[in-house]
Structure formats: C-alpha cells, structure tokens
Image (tube, rainbow, N blue to C red; front, side, top):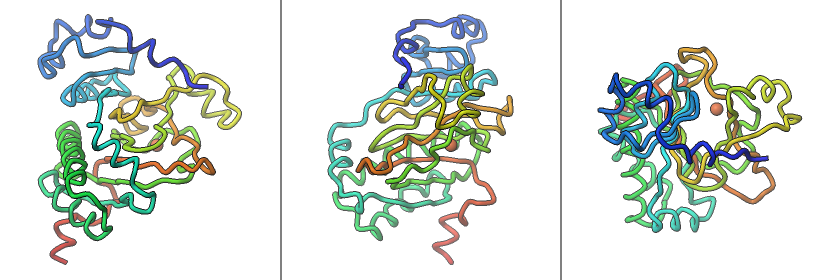
Length: 251
Ligand SMILES: [Fe+2]
C-alpha cells in the first residue's frame, strides 16, 4: 500500500516555515519562501537550492519535486536495459562531466545530445550535494538495477545521501512514526509506505546524522517485473569509495 504523500504536498506555508521565518537563514537561501512544504521532519521543496534545508538538524528528508525534460525522459525509457550506464566514480564536481563522458563512451551509450543533458543534470546535482555536505569530492554511483537491490527497510550508515531515480520505480520510505514497526516486520509490514515521485531528488539523513537514525527506506521490489531502474546515488567519500577519478586517469 502506498501512503498518501500528496496530502502533505498540498499543505501551504507550514508550521516549520513559520517557526523559521524570523531566523530567515533558509528562506533567504532559497529566495522562494512559498516553495517549501513540510510534514514534520520531512520537507518538500521546489528548487535545487532548497535542498540545502537538509542542513537543518530537525530535517531528516528533503524532497525536491521536479520534472525532467520530456526528451530526456523518453530517451531514458527507450534505451535497452543493457545500454543503461552502470558506473561509480569519486570526483570533484568540476571533473564530473569528463568522468561521465569518458565512462559513457566506454559503455557506448547512444544519443550524444541526450547524454549531454543527462551529464548536465548529474553535474548540477553533484555540485549541489558537494556544497551542502562541504566535501570537495563526491562518490557518484549511477546504477542499472534489475533486481530487488536493498529491498529490506533500513537506515543508511551515512550522514546524508542524495537519491534520484531516472528510470523505473522509485525509492520507498517510511514516515518516522512507522519506522520501528517497518524495521521489525520487514516483509510482514502492512502499514503505510511512501514513495518518491518520478524524477524527485531526495536527500536522506542516515544513521550518522544528528539523531542517529534518519529515514527508513528501501529499494522498490522489482525482481521478475521486467523493470530496469537507473538510480543516481551520491555520497560523501568513504573507505569504500574508489580512488579519485583524476588520479586514476593519471594512473
Ligand atoms: Fe539505503
């Protein structure tokens, strides 16, 4: 059962915003005070810049509701699963376009114009994530997924993680009041499950965030459905990151 996330999205100026209107920090940063929409520790926003609200200690999940260009969406949908990229690079935002183009050429990803659009979109997200987390390098995973992946409800062992699904079913998440039950019951959990919408960009806090918990979520179960997802996952560098892309090129 998918919960009614849209009810939260229909709210107008929230108590959260009102409480912070005096401080002005985020509202000045976004310049769009009416674009933010909250539901407790979960915030909906209307611009890429608004994603920075995840830096607030009370916010555990921020979701930028956005549309990709129809051309890019159609191209991604029409690619054969084997043509979808599947890569991981640790890179500075300024080197990301080169790193991606290089990987795409190795994968023989067709459609130069659409590839450029995809690289541009990922570049903007990587730059924003680096600015929000204060990291000079970002661990970029662009994953082709045709199985259930992380189907169990879980927290990520990170401080912050950015996710967006370019193709296929979207990441599912659980409101905090239902987290304990979902973690305990897993496949037997029958409570409400929220889902990101197509092309939403979300930054989740994980177990290394301020509360030590974050937002419970899972990959949508897709095994045997015929779907192949294309997921972008951005993380701060860690011990499991590859060596920085630029160094690997100088190798
Ligand atoms: Fe996760």
